[in-house]
Length: 219
Image: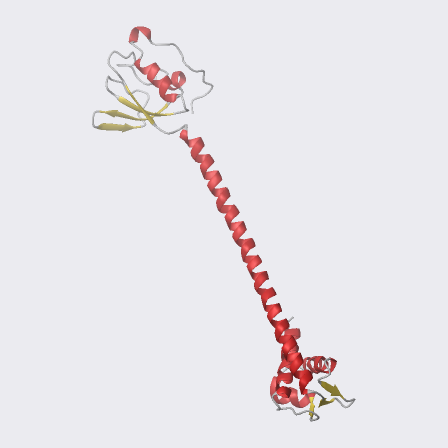
């Protein structure tokens, strides 16, 4: 691709030199002189450039490789046509770049959208674990009992993550903590955890229920 672009550029440059009068009509030039004095490219590249000009009727080439300028008008037409083609090619290149950028942007958009969807799904799944607070009322049957003796998780499905007693907060209280009235339990669980925990905790001692939910294993 670089070589094609190179010899086409050289052909255009020679045509411009013909139109400007630097290479007058009927004058003769040689490929070797062009190569040595100006363009510093391979003989094959010069040969291809001269071949383009010959095909357009701008120059003729003798068997001795001597190049004769035939028409400055043909050279002008060639420049006009190829500047147009160059513009079309440039627009095509710009379009290809834009399409590539659009593809990359679409891929990035898809990744961000998937991340948003996945994150939203995680948030929805996490809603069931949002902590809720349940206050122990007076006369509740849990007062004076330890968490373990109450089989708290087995009967509520709630996991105690903190206990507030006045201004003091215990994080993840152990199973031997004794519950008191006005304690506030911070628990997590499914969407019904507050209702089950509230019912279990604050049922009066003479009416406290048996196991509320079945459980297979404690988390």
